[in-house]
Length: 151
Image 1 (spheres, rainbow, N blue to C red):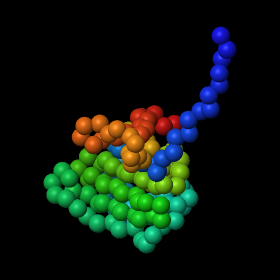
Image 2: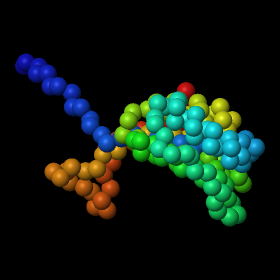
Image 3: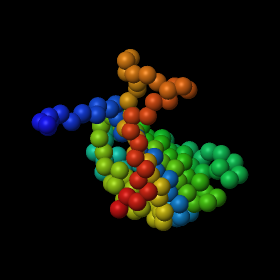
């Protein structure tokens, strides 16, 4: 029986979406809007993005949800984060149609906020094409990688 070779399928996506949850952050750092703004500017440079305007850092929430929220528009999409003062955690989303290295994001979070533990997920985003069948409920996952142990 003859073996036939088939060219590998190339996955084309709209963009990459990193979801990063961090625990054990420094309360002094996550509670400081100047540090949060500086983090956004540094992260944009380190992942080679182009900012669109200045980072917006605003105190939001009450009770156990209170903390700063960061929004940084970038030419290829956005960076958003919420910092929770009650338990010293942060929840970060980086979405871009330009590729970036999730490890650089994690390292920058570690440097600025001294986070002790991380949970991450990287998703490749793509709207369903006209010929695709979308599961009931409309969700269509192109690719997701749980990566709790980024080095």
